[in-house]
Image (cartoon, rainbow, N blue to C red; front, side, top):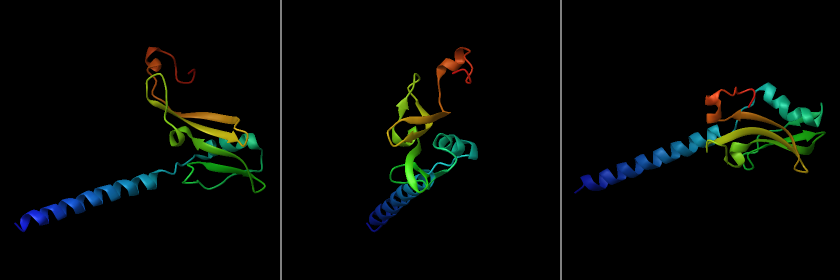
Length: 125
């Protein structure tokens, strides 16, 4: 009889560890990294003084500041909403948006479109 409670305790500890590891791994990987080229794409519409601030974990975006004032935000669409494309799979786009909600620039980071199989090159798409 002692075996059964011990087995249950081991099972509970194992589940707890798996869940903890999953949450920890997700938290660690939730902040996207940007190449210098992509950082420049986000900042260029806001002028030479624009600065990309630290990733805001709660809002899942980067504030964009000019002279210590927020003038816009940079984000990846996958962190805000999964926008399905023709294939049904989401497209991940890097966007910069100003405070009025105007999209200042966009850059497709990943997509999985079957139309590429029929001969339309990715650059043309």
